[in-house]
Length: 229
Image 1 (cartoon, helix red, strand yellow):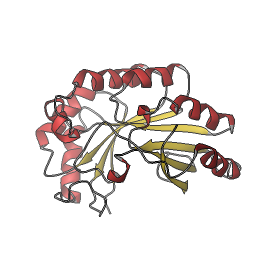
Image 2 (image 1 turned 60 degrees about the vertical axis):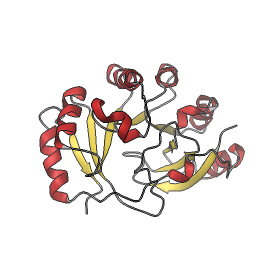
Image 3 (image 1 turned 180 degrees about the vertical axis):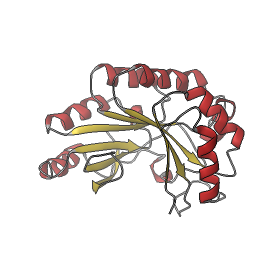
């Protein structure tokens, strides 16, 4: 059973270019210390699937899409079926993922269930496990998901939340070399809140965000900044 831990009936931000609803699935295979959705680490069903679908259906004349986020949605075996049901309502589907289950991502892409994918890039390969909060992380699983997106035909973006205490300029140079290409890459400024898993991080300044952007641009010319006032 899908564990819906939250629902946002309308967003202009979560699905680029679409008026969308956002559903939050509980459970995650990472423990990023800066996560702002830490209440979703443990699966908890606050809404049954039929209620979620009814709420989405009631707004189908207004909505253009549904963003599925978490937590980590690919942990749920029922995810592909839910994505089909959203498509049956005539809506597009955006999937947010950390990319640690490339087998699931491959199936979703092959079956045409995602119309847009946003994959989090936690850090450079050398520091990935530390930033993701996973000891002995299998980096090849992340690399495979990156390749699936880069070699596929589904629109996608990569994005990194910038945390001064966890990232160095060298990390972003390494990310640029790794992801080199014309895909969309977003640098997201970390923001603290009561829901952050570990309350020990600071928000990057606009100057730092711009400096990092300049480091990345030679490799990823379609880099943009999010979350800076």
